[in-house]
Structure formats: structure tokens, C-alpha cells
Image (cartoon, rainbow, N blue to C red):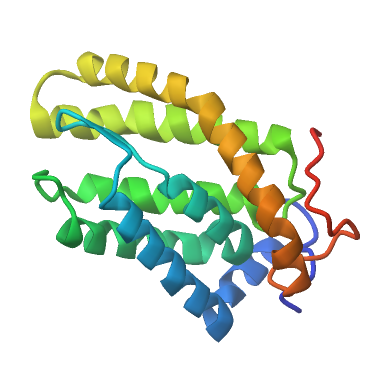
Length: 206
């Protein structure tokens, strides 16, 4: 199956997963995954805002979004595993190593890949993706890890995480749409993603 062809059926169908798993055999995709991993690790070391030991505002989600749009959920899971481990070694801000964060990174790579890889890119899809990541991964699951590590109780971290992720949600959606609009023409011309006949980077609402 050619790399730039659309996988038929639902994202959970066999054809989709054959195409997603095939990215592991592509030198081009693995090289891109290495570049994305390096960028994620660098961005992890440069949070825009650091509040205490638990609230960090970063923009790694932009790199992850574009990467998973190109190489899909299988490679996305591996990138999550690698970047969590190497990111901790490079810049951990005093946090102890905790394998729960690797689970979070791998789940995030899976979710980004399922929402974006070989899927029709729309603003609504990007909004739903951010809702799942922000509230499902960052708030619900992230609060469990923080309660286990720092001991202030689940509801404390749930509340602070809920406020942060709610405030960041519109910003993250706007930035994600802007980045895709900027990069889509190049990604399509280079053959990294399927061409839809619209090479100007427009993203419909639905």
C-alpha cells in the first residue's frame, strides 16, 4: 500500500493499522520521527511558563500533532516512549522519574495518531482532539500521577489541571489550526501526506 494513499474504512480497521504499522519500515518516517523527538525534547526543556512543580505550559503539542498527522499512531506511541525517557534525562525540573508519564506520552501518541493520521483534517476534529487530550489525558489521568507523586490529593490536581487546560484550550486549538494551515501545502507537495486536491492549506470547519 502506497504511503500517500488513504486507508479505507474506520481508523480501527485492519487496512488502517496495516498502513499505520507500515510507517515503521519507512526510513523517511523514522527520520522524521527522530526529528520530531528531538524537537519535543528541546521544547520540554523550555516551558513558556512554569508554576510551582506541577503546572508547566509547553508547546510540544504542536510538534506532536504534525508528527502524528504524518506518521500515525504506531510511530506516535514509540515517539512518546522515547521522548518521555530522554526528556526526563535532559530536563526534568527536579521531578522524580515516574513511569506513569511514559504511559501518558504513549497514550497521547496513540490518540493524536488516531485522530489525525490519514483522516480528513477539519477544525471540528482538532477541537475534539484537544478536548480528549486536555481533559482525558492531562486532567483525569495527569491528576492521578500527580497525586501519587506529590501527595496533595487527587482533587487538588484535578482542579488546578482543569483550570489550566480550560484556559489553554482555545489557545491550543487556534495555534494548531494555524500551524497546519502553514505546513499543509509543504507536507502535501513533499508527499508526506495524501493530497486532497486543495494545496493551499485551507482547513474546513466540518
